Length: 220
Image (cartoon, rainbow, N blue to C red; front, top):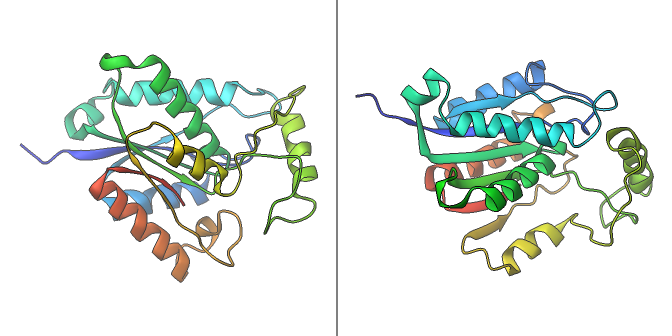
């Protein structure tokens, strides 16, 4: 019997408005991720705003995750090790990964799929005030995008940007381990446009090590 491979469900970014699993940039990145990790990677497509505002992207990604985790696909059933199931995403995709994690924890129970770990690369959340290292116009730009992604949304008091998400998970009752990796001097999702640069290679090495070990939640 051939060795089964870990399964990674990858969710692309694009501010909930652009991008797709078939986008050449994401197709190349997912291929590189599969080659580097030796994993079976499922690249998720979801409906985009403004034609399909949130929660369409959340609902579609949750359905795709459930499909992959249930091994309805013959290739996944034959070659995937669903005891080593991971989630990963960048930017808005990392935001969606968070939603899938919450849904899985809320509805899975003992019979639901067990997620070994998750990698949130440059997760895109929004706040009302700029944070250190963020352009002064960042909140206004985010507000403009959110107007299309989720019309009528009202922002809450919590701001999960920067280390706040990491610190909240670390301080929670969750029994796992959380790690934080900084890529100093790099722009948002730089690893997609500059996959050969030193920091992109360093990030990929960390993702590979994480999936090989499979015991931690990473925010990269």
